[in-house]
Image 1 (cartoon, one colour):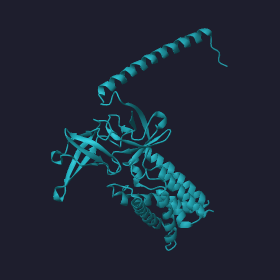
Image 2: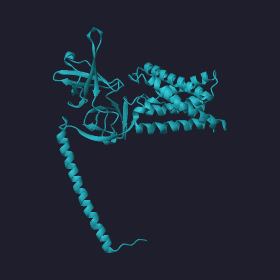
Image 3: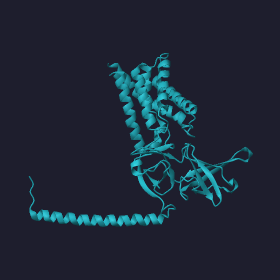
Image 4: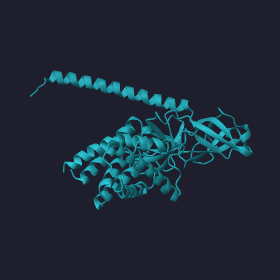
Length: 202
Length: 159
């Protein structure tokens, strides 16, 4: 048996109170920092949207460009069509199915994914996945004004993704016979290195 | 060891290995089809209700870890089991290279089956532009699967 004197216990109590106080101060500082970063990011739907951080718990076994599984579900407020972003707020995909504690996310590289995007003022298009690293852009309102290297962000017209989320850059433009062009987009998000994602909640 | 036990252990091993691979780098997952190894081995030996249940279980586990509707991979695995059982009776396979060729052909057949099933249900091409996977997946699975087949055969013979 290990007995401690009253003095020792008193000292231990004082130490623990001191630690508790410093931890409270740390929490307060961190909360302030989070608030500051949220403001700094100037995320368009800042006032309207709240977000939660989810860990990636699995990937599609057939082709990881199809989708991933996260450890947050209905209980935490994840809903179908909730936009999913990476830590730099680049578009990753959207929620496809939700269960109590987990959710399935289809990536922007998935062939079943599509989103309305803006290339520049007045030029819009539809982003589609291809089950491969590059995505394609279709139905561009003014294809002649689109060049490789142009930045693409969400337009908000689909009412799924808020306006202004960064998507990627035009990687290449392939011309076909008859003047048709295919626009390939390289997403900003590096799917090979993400370990957690941000899910937007309304 | 009975074939049932080999099948169950093989499927469990595939599940655990897939989990570890996904933790290391999920983009390595499509390069090898570990679930098929025990199924091809069972199919080569016999076609009984227990082997059907093990194959369907492996398929459902694959379905759970993919975005396909539940049943697509289970159906694929059942067809594979049936075809391997039918065709392996015509050839005598007992060497390392024999096993390699069998696994190579079977996994290639599985990819073709996946294309046919997904096409039939109107689903999009699951491999996208990764057409090299059609070659790499059977080849890597054959290289990994042949030594496992030899180990399975030794365990099975000890019965």
